[in-house]
Image 1 (cartoon, rainbow, N blue to C red):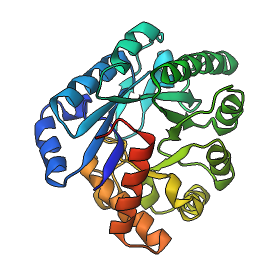
Image 2: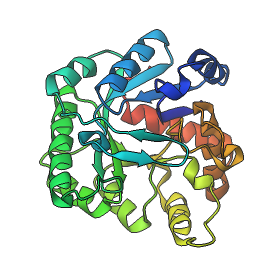
Image 3: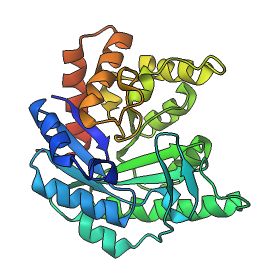
Image 4: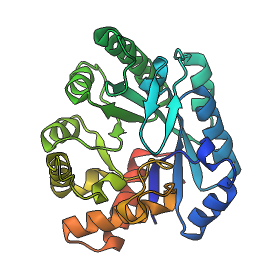
Amino acid sequence: MIIDTHCHIQFNAYKDDMADVVERCKDKNMILNAVGSQIDTSRRAVEVAEKYDFIYATVGLHPVHLFSTHVDEGEVIFKTREEKFDYNAYKELALDPKTIAIGECGLELYHLPENVDRAGVLALQEEAFLEQYRLALECNIPLVIHVRDAHPEMIALLKKLSNPIKGVVHCYTGTWEHAQEYLALGLNIGFTGVITFPPKKTNPQPQIDLLEVVEKCPLEKILVETDSPYLAPQAYRGERCEPWMTEEVVKKIAEIKGMSEREIEDITEKNARKLFTKII
């Protein structure tokens, strides 16, 4: 069984055909984790999870939604909504039986508003992350961590925490050096369709570094995900990503590890169930 540990099936990208997409995932005998990015999408994640027995929810505030900025990722363009983390509102969602984690939360220094004080933004994001960390501890569920252009800052923050942290660094695209730091802290590493992309001719090193992480990451710490509707694997590049495309991530990991796809499916399912203990 494949568990897509990070998708956004509740996002507007699926508003016209979510039922069809969900049915395709059901036909493939999958389990999905619908991840929120702010209060509205977190609430919708819980609603969808309550509707389908094989879908679960993660609720939290993405660091990019702590301020207003323009986001252009090519495959999606939007303006973020400034939101302050409301502990009680998120706690209500976190206590739902189908909520399995808090997130995605973390640090984002890639999408910053123009003429913004970087140190001020980082301080705001760290404060929101620590509140979500506190909520995860209170509810005894793991964290789904987002990090972009901020690995040194994220690692330094995690090392300051007084309690051990359970969670996953999702959509990992960093180096083996940073991955080792996360692994030493007990975290899992989540891989998306990005690992299937060819190296860029103008700058191949990031992809070379990422595949090194896939090769060296301990099997018991690997999770698979899509981050759909974003980051469709190379076989479907240019299309809207759907959770069932996680199979391409499994295929690539199997190729790199010299194992069968079934073996990787079984291992990553076991890893997901071990981390997200509320999955039935």
